[in-house]
Image (cartoon, rainbow over the protein chains, first blue to last red):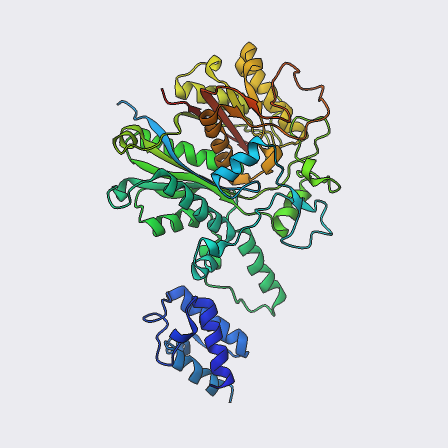
Length: 78
Length: 416
């Protein structure tokens, strides 16, 4: 697992209060990990802070799963 | 229209001297002080370096980490105390009509720590607003009853009353009246506060409202003592289940006491100073008695607002002497703030619980830390100094007054 992936997963475990083994690539924040609309906004903010990036709102809408978050951040950090 | 009778069928408490009702009561009757140096932040530069914090409390013992993270402390405290009260009431969640169960809560401030953290974050940044999406819903004072209703599915009236240190007494009186009028069968009421924060301590210090007895925190809250120098900030929650009498009787509920009246008034005088003649305080006790249809001579015990401030304590006792006349000397008067500190918006609720338990146990908790007589106080008054007193209590009054001149008073009576 890449460094980015493990950091993303740690944030999700912390913010959503879920078990690490639930945080798989295809897991959806809202459908699988119990996030509501406020949790999702908070997650995006935490990703921005952790990786020192800006995720515009229209891009954030496309980040709905663990895998999508990791790919987006990996792309942004290239 | 005949008013319904209202009784108390459940209690919950999270206080600086005990984290359950049982621990709280034991603390009260043994004269325990909840004051100690502040642990939540470095108070070295503050004029007051101590407070009555909640102790030995890990919120995740009660609330899942994810849920707890979405709540300010004042909401967490509300949840823990109301869980205890609801369990104590033994209400059957499957059979009650939840449309007729409300939550009417009191909080003087709300999520002060949440507000403080978010503003500090912003101030430390580059000016780009990066506010947490939970900032507002965690902070707003009405979220505590909102959270309780979400957990239990109670769909009746739901809101928070805000009248500073009278908040939870206002909440109890609103709850009393909804049940009296037949709008609800049950209301979870009470209050919570969590203002032992940089902003809370700094703000109250700036008003010169708090004791600065840093060399001896445990004796700092000393209502009625000649050397009192201000209140001691406390935090926590009290929850009370009020229920329509026939509803409680039909399900065989344990009934602690009847709530027989509530009084409301305003000083209409100054933002923070009490009226020197106590006119608003006299009015609130009189209209509480009138609301209950009772005579002053029937009152056995008064849990005063008694915050340990120089002006407030004397004004309140003068008002009691005025309202109760010759009978005042027969009343067991106390201030449990001598032990718990001042829980602000939660004060009315935790003190009402003390009054209700005085009726239940026939014991009046003491006003601790009294050593020097204040010559401005009538010596014939029984201020229940330093030691609890055994006393059959049939009728107990609980006073609370808030900055802004808000006065609220509730009367409890042993069930006939």
